[in-house]
Each structure stands twice: as structure tokens, then as C-alpha cells.
Amino acid sequence: MEKTAIVVGASDGIGKQTAIELSKIGYTVVGIGRNKAKLSQLAKQLQGKFETIQADMSLLSTTAQVATQILEHYAQIDLIIHTADVLLIKRQETSEGHELTLATNYLSRFLFNAILLDSLKKSPAPRIIHVAAAGMPFKLNVKDFPLPQSASSFKGHTVGQLANDYYGIMFSLKHPTVKINVLNPGMVNTNIRKKTESNFLVSMVMKMMERIAKPVGVEAYSHSVVDIALGKNQEANRTILINSKGKGIKLSKGLQNTAIQEHIWEQTEQLIKDQKLLKTTNQ
Image (cartoon, helix red, strand yellow):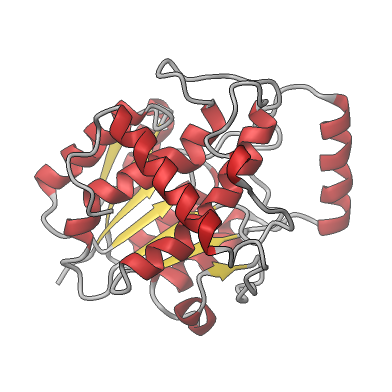
């Protein structure tokens, strides 16, 4: 039976290359991204079972529309991969009032997965992959989430990355039949850092990190993502958080805090319910 993969963030970087690799091995791929021209170019390149959806997934209303559109065309989904992200310094908000980076790299993922969950569970081997920054040496507390109105987008990005970890842990407990992994790609040669708004200190830190870590190519890292998607990485089959080398990340004490796990989940669910975008609470 043919398998269907949804790749959010397919117009560039890790998402684009992962979509290409999955298409090559026979998946029907639905690639979602903001850049219509890049998506069209990718569709021409693949010339196979590849559908593109142009959408701004920082908007939760758009996220819900896209997920519903997918449900109308695909009764069963086997794989969802989230790679869409944006890195900003000064606070920017979406037209819906959410901090932009948090909405992109966390809130929309939560909502998207929730809407497609029943379809995903029809797969014999369902899997969700979040490319984020798994295992960051920080922790969240109650006052960090929901994100305060005074918080910068740089803070929002950090909170979103951490929230992905908590989400993966809670999701695996609530839905043990669906495998979920949160990945830390480390330094990959993508455009996200190049597109970051100008800030001297952040720019210097990033340059130092690149010199130390030596970014790997997008194509090389996408192979690691595909191996996880296909169940070939045994550590990813046993562990939720995965580092840039494809190895499991041990949960910190902060991530093991059940009160914070539940708080992040419940507050996220409430934010989405307040916007009246989730009809059920199966998530």
C-alpha cells in the first residue's frame, strides 16, 4: 500500500530535501510551505506523486484549513514531519495576536497534529517528527507559558523549542500507538540563521557556533531524518528526543517534571480552543 507523508516547511532547507528523499522512495508527499515559487519548482523537479500547498503556518486559522483540506483528500496519513521555523530577535506577532516564532514552530504543530490524528492512527506504522532543538539545557516554568506579552521573539523561539520537547513526551503518553520524535539537527547549512534580523551579538554568537560545530549539509542531514521516518534508527524507535548524531537524548530533570508537562499541554490546548479551531479534544 502506498504511503503518504506530510512535510511542513517543504519549500526550503531540511523540509525540502526530506520531501525529495521521501518522494524518491515512493511516498506520496504533500509539501507545505510559504514560498509558492519554490514549491512550484520543487513539484516540477519531482514530477511524481507530489502535491504542494502554499500556506503561512504561523496562522492557526490557516493551519486548521490546511489540515482539513488534507483530510478531505487523504483518508490515511503515515508520516507527518514538521520543519517550518523562523528565528527573530525583536517581538513580532501574527495577525491573530500570537508571537510569530512560537506560533510557527510549536502552536501550529500542536494544532495540525491534533486535526490529523485520527487519520494518522489508521496507518500501520504512524509517525510524527518535529525538527526543533531537542534537549536544550534549559527548562520552562509556569510563568514562561503562555508566553508573556513583554517577551521578545528570541525568547518566544526558545520557549517554542523547549515546548516541542514537552509536547513529544506528553504525546507519547497520550497516544502510545503513534511514534513521535523531536530532533535536534545541530548546525545544518540552512538559511534560517542567514534570514535572522540584524543583531550584532546574536550574529557573532552564530558565527562562533558555526566555526566550532562546522555545519553539515542539508542533504546529509535529511538522510538521517528519513532513516528515522522509516524506522531504521533503532534509538529513535526507543527514544523520543534525538540529537544531531541520531542518538537518544536523556531527559533532564526539567523535562521529567510532570507538572510542567501537563501545564504546557493544557495551556496550549486552551489557546487553541479559545480560537475555536479544534472541534474535539482527542489530542
